[in-house]
Amino acid sequence: MEGGCCSTSEETRKPAPAVARRTASAAAATAGAVKERPYRGVRMRKWGKWVAEIREPNKRSRIWLGSYSTPVAAARAYDTAVFYLRGRSARLNFPEELAAEEDCEAAGRMSAASIRKKATEVGARVDALQSSLLSQRRQQQQQQSNRSTLAPKNPDLNQEPSPESSDVD
Image (cartoon, rainbow, N blue to C red):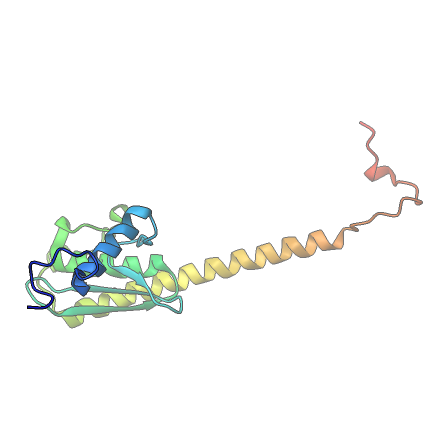
């Protein structure tokens, strides 16, 4: 009986692949190598897009909430969907930003398609706002860097200082 169950050699005993994967992921988690997800229901694709999805209660199916350029937009889409699925008891990413106009009575009674539609609308709106804010910040940074390049880096030391730039108090 070769390689039987009573073998005590360390070389012949190898964990099952699933066990080895769990052990490796547990070791990575304790080492801090695993990236934390910034928001509930949101993950990042390999190419940098942020996506949101949620499981339907008591079903194996998922509701696809869309792909966004910012994690905040994906998180807001998730919040909208989870609110309509679970009502006020839902665990939200942004509980303080739950809109007052949200209809609590409709929560729990909407179809998956209407939840998806509502969540993608919210996500698209937030994504547009976030993208415009990012582009404005980039423009401001670019303008500031252009201003700093206008000032001479190496002043002419042979030139007499002007009265505006003197250090006299």
